[in-house]
Image 1: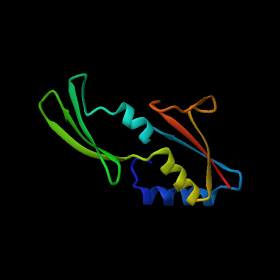
Image 2: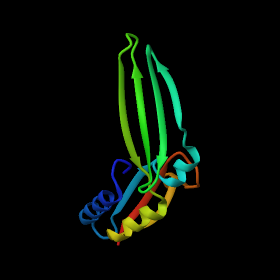
Image 3: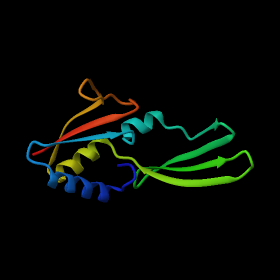
Image 4: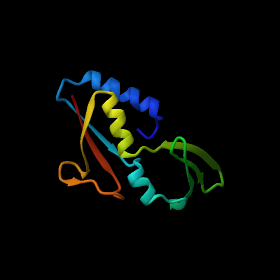
Length: 132
């Protein structure tokens, strides 16, 4: 969902809800929740893979809440490739409101599906919603 703004996520939820029977469930696996990002965010990073170098510069922006990232790959022969990306960030409350508007009820948020309830700062969240 992080590739889509709030209006598009709402449309996606509505389409999914229209395909589910009453009682049908939706499972969302995400790292892009505010409750994760604000605890684990890193502005920059770098790594090497073989003879390639990777660097990343990121910033958090608001209205809408998002991470804007500039990535650079430099190959052994000095060729440089740069990419920009935007990842939209939603809080659990925002996701719940969008789900409800689509006729879906948020049932639970897990960090390990069906086993461990989500706590702030976990690296992933599994959101379970059910069609009303």
